[in-house]
Image (cartoon, rainbow, N blue to C red; front, side):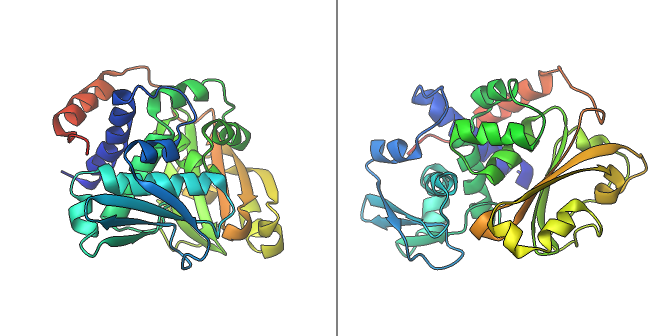
Length: 293
């Protein structure tokens, strides 16, 4: 199975668990889920930098420690959900808990396949597709709409933006950057319809002269969560051959030291009301979804 399928399967495994437990509304409580499996969850203020949480095992007992150095309830809930991903996803415990302790780096910041699968499990657990799509129907196609979804799901702005890009039928791109360098970019299917895109990969420089680049050059503004909004040509960011205006909205992520940028357009691409492909995907997932621990 390819990597995209594995990540999709991780999200769907979380959603299947919620259906099994009859959890159908937002927000989803990962602490209650851990308690239902007798997993002790505790905060750890002095977790080493870069570590979001830990999964521990002693005999047949499990525990989760989550970092609090980033003062964000959404990030902490995602970190706990990430560790639950390691607990529930097939093969993870045998692979990562050989020494009884595993330190995680949640938040789509590593290419490690087990960490990425746990990240996508967390996204599916906290933002399951059916209720999240229903919430999206009442949200603006903008950074403000994503913020409203984050408030409803009690999730971090970054994780919510990534989930939004993965599910919206409108054109959107979510970019996270540190300094003048892009960490990663997620694009909606509608945005991907642009011909001859220049894919934004890790390490790519921010486009010079953009509002995001100006914000990224002022660490003080990033720390206080300043935001900027501009209209720009999509080619300035994603290249391609079509000139099209897009909304560029960026916000500083505080002590995280990063900038989140949302590019959005209602003119690029088109909505797709054909669900046959999604139903085929559900069939594949049902075939491959493991039993729950």
